[in-house]
Image 1 (tube, helix red, strand yellow):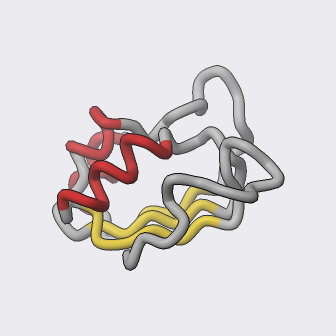
Image 2: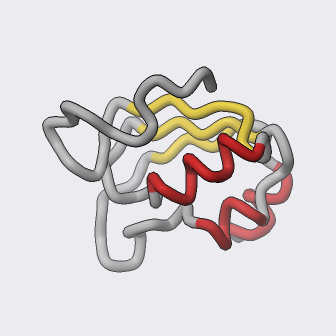
Length: 86
């Protein structure tokens, strides 16, 4: 189950299409269920992660790091995640 994965995982990688049920699958509520220090990797689709909620979790130190090669708005010429040290 997703809640168990969120609570136990050190790394979460996303490998799913973007659908109505997966849009923002990682958001403020689901990120709060993650283990402190989790790292998020999204190479699947932009829109799976609420980028503003992720930035807040990164800024707070709850999420230790994130690596993305897809973003909600493509092509990504600017993004709130760009330039963050983590």
